[in-house]
Length: 204
Image 1 (cartoon, rainbow, N blue to C red):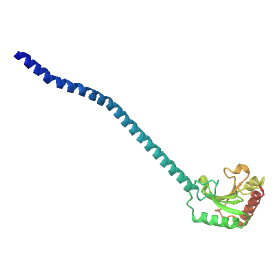
Image 2 (image 1 turned 90 degrees about the vertical axis):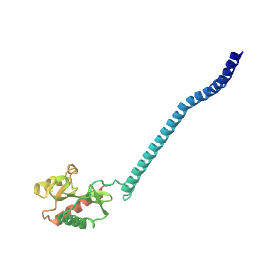
Image 3 (image 1 turned 90 degrees about the horizontal axis):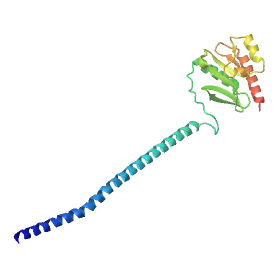
Image 4 (image 1 turned 60 degrees about the vertical axis):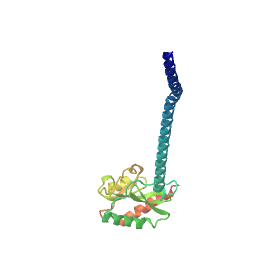
């Protein structure tokens, strides 16, 4: 029958299309499944790279901090604290006073000079016996702080309150402050410094 031939031909033409569609379906499904896996893999890689970058940045920062600390402490002896106070701008008067103190102190036994808290200090076996106070904490004078024997602080202040004072921090331990920018008796200053040196040198 003629109609039967046409129907058979149409069925033969449709059959390859269905087969192709059937074959393509698993591939599409596999591609669809692979897409989330690829995306997840990409996200993991991106996060891994970001984490690696953060670790590298932190490592570089830590290395920089360590290098800065090494530079800060390189000039000091091992275990020695480093002064963080800025060096003061001196006047001609304060420079002359410091030089005069230096001449007095450097001849005393076992003396060393070191800047601490932004001021020159003189030490015997590492312990301070004289410290400059150049308008320290708003004080209007240049002075030196010295340890003194028991009772000497009160006696000196009573005798000349314009010359002697109780310094901050160390005053409660009996130290005295001596004003030096108002024409002091430098022989008296030298005697007080020698006494301070002896007091500290006796301590072990």
